[in-house]
Length: 254
Length: 254
Image 1 (spheres, rainbow over the protein chains, first blue to last red):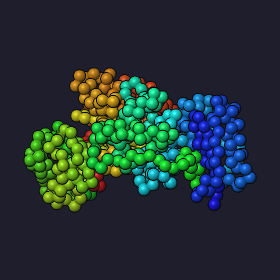
Image 2 (spheres, one colour; image 1 turned 120 degrees about the vertical axis):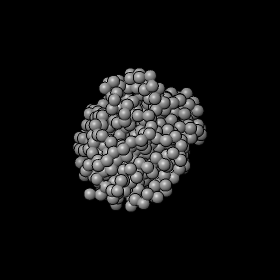
Image 3 (cartoon, rainbow over the protein chains, first blue to last red; image 1 turned 180 degrees about the horizontal axis):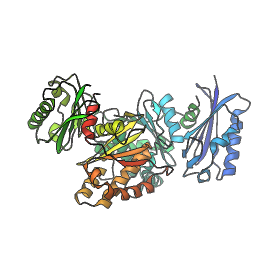
Image 4 (cartoon, each protein chain N blue to C red; image 1 turned 90 degrees about the vertical axis):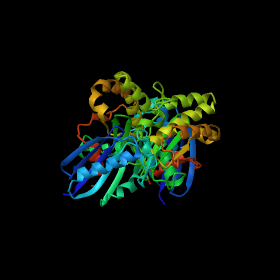
């Protein structure tokens, strides 16, 4: 089977895998550099280490930010040095047959749809809680990217007239205030359900996986209170898929 | 061409048309009764007046509320007497070949997609400002209804941790405070755009049509501030389609 490299590029670390549509054959992680020159070097090195003599057919990248259809980074709050960098063009030099780049939360959501807890749902939202808050939308079993590739920016749904959800999420996380975190996340759930009436929300990201038992009970209370259609409420589940970010990135080119 | 009856049932009035896929042949409006018995009589009378000897093939209804796929009203805040009423079953007695019932904002959005300012867009949101705040989502040129038929409940997106957008909208409208109304509506626009990245938002409803020039400038400021992808911002346009609610209802069965 064809072997694919999947990279998950976040503000803290870059994870890469080699995937053959069945198994993860290799897996590497490095810290995210702080500037563009370092970033280019790191990506080049990671790809060459993952390759290591293998025949690789394609490269998929999930990036914490908004990437347009030309592969240019439009917005990456935790890697500001990437703003306006044409990652797609940079990746052409690696000479893979196929290269695809998308938002990291979209990749997470795609992996959940094909291999994880999103299987079987026609419409669901993947929601990642980590450094920031990310989201991806599956509509009719396919990723919905919107008109400019920036659909699913869940963290930027406003929590009030002043700040977005990500702002309050990060404050609560830093204080380890799980009640407040549950309220912020629950409000997000309610908004997503009232607007999209999805079958499920699949949670992922380091914070969700580690602390969901602490904040989810508070979040579910908010959902019950604010979701207007209370019949047969959508499922809210936590991911149990390893490497979901880099797996989803690989799936972009499979 | 086949003739269809379209009814737009709102908290204040019920409008009905006869439509032949090209022209509105007849048009009637009556006040919405305050109880179920009066409501049944009114709908029966309106349909018989619209029919008036014509050969009618189908009936489409848009209702201000959530209706499940069995035609039962699940939630109608401005017509509470309809809660749990099986409108679909009631309509069977009229012996039309085809009956379809949907949310009124979905019908508005469908009419805009086929005949109004939503033509040409693949993905857009229809947003109605009237007694309440309603919404409909066009995804891939089709109405997206969600898993329980309640997608697009835009008015119930929370404006803060306490109240939803509709709450603040109604307060601002009643005070004729167009700056505040613009801020509430702008926050809704920003949330919709950040989550769905649609190509456009099409505004309708009596309040939007009458006062958009007063509140839209404030709303657009909020959009510019809070939408994260600022490249090529989605269009925000106001409907100029007459009878969009009842037209959309008729389109349900065409």
